Image 1 (tube, rainbow, N blue to C red):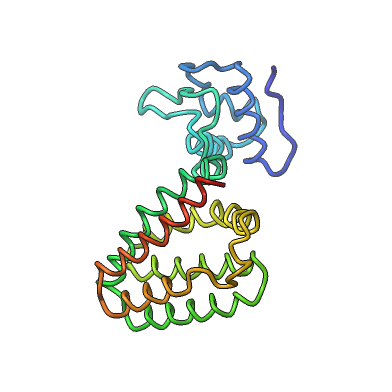
Image 2: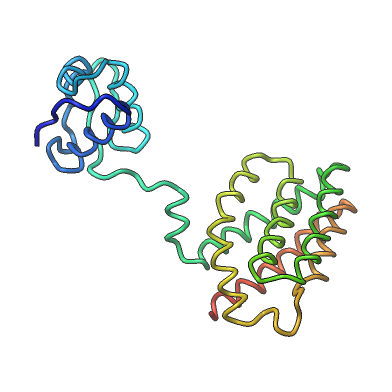
Length: 229
């Protein structure tokens, strides 16, 4: 498959796509050293800076690897699967097990580190969860996740906050399905309210043991339901 010159715009995206096709199509097998930037630029009809950006994108995708003094080599025939895609494909119970580990530790940290602003945010999130009980399942799940996100944020660790943010979309859709499938709100429009109130109180009081224990019990209960679903 010949490379061929590219159309004017967007050049970086086109160059990246064309080079990726050469790799995934087997024209450049794993272990192959790619042509020089100059050669690729001439073949594609673009500048070296465009080729350089395209190679950076392919490096980020896990397809190629620059080796100082040797050139750029193909290291994989398929792009590496990104974390969000992996989460979307994972079993919800697997995602939830990791959520339990992350959130229970975050609850301990939140109880030790929470600020006045964090406490206000937690109280507001708890009130919003209660208000959402009068709405549909999706709105309630969104409010529930927002409260948990506020607990994680109170831990004061941006990595934990980012990790939870990655989990949230994968959790949301399937938790909505679970609520509807098992009719969890048929008899109680606000399930888990007492537990969530105790969690907020424990974080506010600076009681890490209680915060962790309350959240562990609540998340384990949901995990057990997920395993039965």
